[in-house]
Image 1 (cartoon, rainbow, N blue to C red):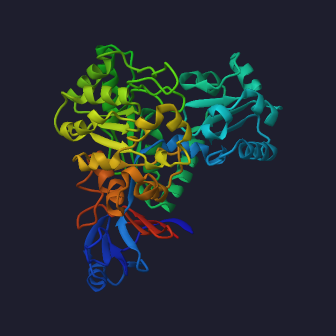
Image 2: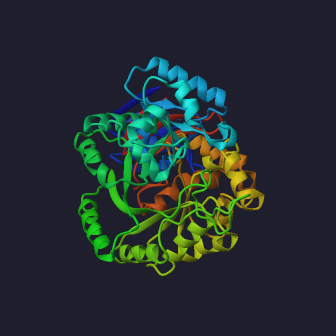
Image 3: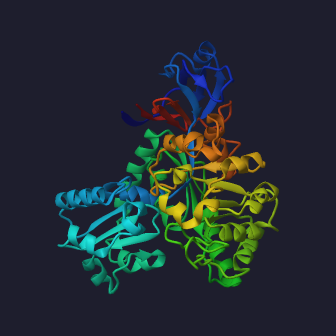
Length: 494
């Protein structure tokens, strides 16, 4: 495979099948950073000109490039060189990976992420096990969903924590604040690696789900150096506990950053957490978890989220709210109930909604931003045990939402799961049988759905003249990406 970024005097992508199915077109012509024509091969070659570059699609699909509607791109890019535990299905496999990595890395810490709750008896790892695997230096390993931390005794001692339990949510910062913070140059190199990975997966746009203000300078630097091969939309944090006046001042700061947006990096949305995750029983539920009195704690006081949304909405901001449990999803929808029509506020994840709330998405114009890989049966054993069979049966209802008229956007939530649209499509079209979509519905959620979710449907998500030339050539059967074009530039050829 070849990662590249080459500008051409026009481009003709020929001998393919242009998305959507039934279009009849076989080729796309690109002029500058825009689609110039969608037609048959001869017409496109003529439109592109004799000096244009040519990509032979080999009979495969020519689609709008994937747009990941929910990703933690900087966090995930930083983790590419760390210990990767994702997919380790058993404690023995976790042991093997940790021991192997620790034996090959001589740094002062062992740092990694991705362990699955289901790999451990009882759903959680132990300090004793990590002490056994890494006895000579501090170790900190984050769960795959980034909501639980696993530290050994050396790391806990440095943090001043006396516990044999894993660290949940904000408690993880007691350890993570002792980790070396990357330098700006290290972060830039991490983003370059992340962009190369995205290009190899047919992704030309990502929507970063938080910490946006801290990233503006990094993306601006890559833009100024001419290195961007990926469009990014940054989300700014919206946190509880602020007075209305303080929240207004925070928005003043965000609006200064928003003014510097362009087609490659656009700070344009606010991100709030209404709850956490089901696996650690920190998602907010209307009824207790199975075999427990726990319901999870909402992160906002009654009426507080609604007031923060009201202020932001009045100033023209779109808001996205992480809401996994049915109580949190209802709280988010209640907060959006009286907002401005057309703002396209969003609920992120929508894993365990109450049946009565599903029709509210379409009625309120709220986008459901969902990540099909989260519903993969290989990841959901602990999730299903915690919510019970009845609630599990109505989990991740993307088909029900589409049928109700709601707009759905798909993404990965990388690094929670791999940056892999094809795995997402596999789950959405088959593995999660109760909500099975056809391929067109699933691809549209990854393309036009993502564009709609970021108010970019006039530029992205379809292949027609005048749209941005963000294009992928893919084989859905293998699956594989043959080429990725971003802004008219070839950024990957496989």
